[in-house]
Length: 233
Image (cartoon, rainbow, N blue to C red; front, side, top):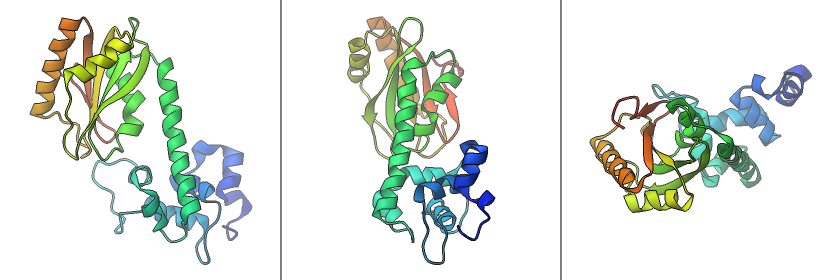
């Protein structure tokens, strides 16, 4: 990036204007630090964000597709990008994991008052998952989050959940209520018939155990559907 003026270089722009002012490619370039012969760190960063999308086409309705690829790519896939070796690939995956852990650590201080609060809690991680996962948000009597627990990991299209696994966690944490959450890897959060049937079964099991199921949130790509808002829960 020596060809860029000092004020235009990502690192200097971050120091001067703050990280929020940088593009995704500029942030990745800072993590990469250096480029290769004939390609700047910014050029390599753009290749990373275009990984698996050779035509550069953004899928309809998909937000930040480059970030999705950065989150879901393996070390081996990142190493396949010209200018990214094992060290740089590891740096990128470490940064992604730190972001995930920061989000997770903040969950215990969260009070859930609406479906939007649940979406804010889980969206940035769950929207990028390439397998369907079923999670529960554990709440105390004042709707403070006690934790978010993954109870099932499925295939590309489905997960298998059993009331025993759901409420075992809720009982162990002395939860007053829970919120069900699962993702659709397709990015479309429209509930399936199976989603409806599972929800009704778990709501009934919660009534028997005295642990209320407040909602079921289906997460898509920057979109969600709340069963409570739909009048299902």
